[in-house]
Length: 135
Image 1 (cartoon, rainbow, N blue to C red):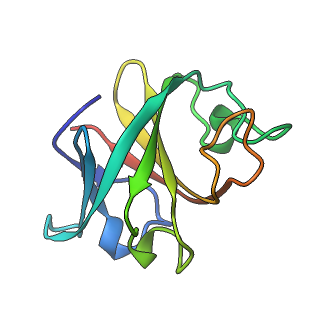
Image 2: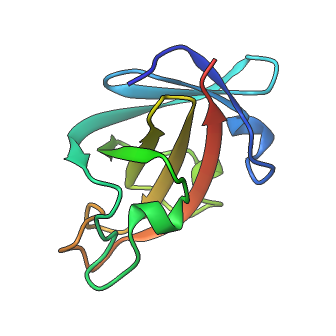
């Protein structure tokens, strides 16, 4: 996993999540000028292939966050309450980091629902997909 401040390249990201720094147990979001807006504590759940289904019978991570070079999806549980900026007021519960090979970009996905995203999940839904360039 890459570390350090990454700038957003998607136009759907709000100003509060225009840049991000990923750490092993947290994700720090910042405005476009690098001013920290909030931190989300996370717990590592595992790594899955991009072709893995997000929910039982549903689309894969690769089709939801398209990338011809995606090679890895890291799943995390959000510890505590997530800021409303992640899911437009809905409570975010999980996240996935979809990375490319070579590592030039990351797609950040936030989810609502009680279940961790995966082929056995029933209560899991995407609420945000945002892209970040690796410097």
